[in-house]
Figure 1 (cartoon, rainbow, N blue to C red):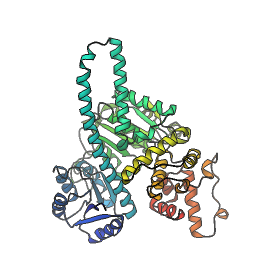
Figure 2: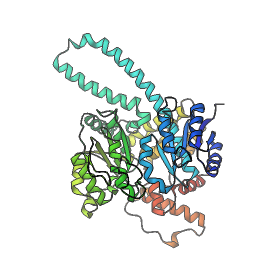
Figure 3: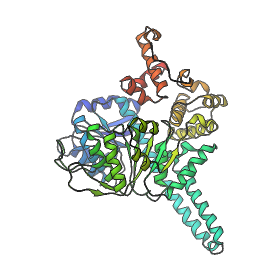
Length: 500
């Protein structure tokens, strides 16, 4: 039996510690508790936990200072830190990320949400280690090949050298797709379709294109952030920061401060100077996801920074020069937004100097079996089981399914199927797809009527959730916002309806 993964919870409130212990221990985690920052540092050095849940406000050393010290120690530098924060501490998030945190959860928190985030970051850390080892092996092999080919290089003609340069570029892209795919998700675009080939060509072009102005468009779940990461980590800025920002998730009152920073005393609660996301991304890439939903007033300030390369922190008397490549993404029609006056035309032209369209999975069904087998092998490695087969009948079902959630949905379905099959052959009965009659319908769905709803409260709730998922093309976060409920409630309802 493999040893339990250790998690360190640093929180001065015993109630929070007990809630997390009750939620996480049944899933095989060993919980270590620290009531203050000093104790958290000692336990982290001795126990080297897999992940740390760190309260920002604690007696003695606060969570941000604890994180800084952990990142300064070689043995604890790579341990992911998730901050636990109250809403009134939201303005500290920029400093928290700058200190080395990878995520945050707002109190009061949902145990299910924390469990999902913990699993994601532990998996990311494991894949990062594998990527580092693969890169080291690749560099060693590259050095050997360089020495072996030195004599041949003197004998080739100019044309042969040009052709070789193209081949080297293709090989670099292949390395990114094959060796870094597990971490950056470029494998989400593996396949044999023409659309996949087009996307890879576009990514290759952008590796040597250092200016701002890349716009990624496509439905939710098609992998726009993964393409942004491929562009960044395959290009000249690969060793510099990649800062992803969800424009919808930024609180409106803190948006300007979080993007551009602020100086001490510029507003209530601004106790110190803070760097914004633009400064944190200096010399690297800032990825603005869901940019179409950015408030119109903030768009003008964003445009100014992109054009001038100067950020003006809130309350500052002088700007700061930054060198940031901006990659934006949207799943909405920006032309319609511009026609409605909710998106600036000049900002659009600045962002869309080069556009990459990410196709929905239903437009490349020939890639579905390839992706399904890839994700199956990927999760089999994570679960520590041998290679798992999938029935042709199951592949036929997946190929015929419209995938409103796109590659993200396929990945989740395969992971769930592997878990349900207990690591054995995946059959059709292991696949759990969204109820799809409305998903394939054309045209807008008619407004729901009370007469259409079941009389049972539970059945009516399930029906409303399915309608919301249909309208949002399977996007659970958007469906939750549409219904005005927490997305964990949708997860629980879907799980209960599947008998799980």
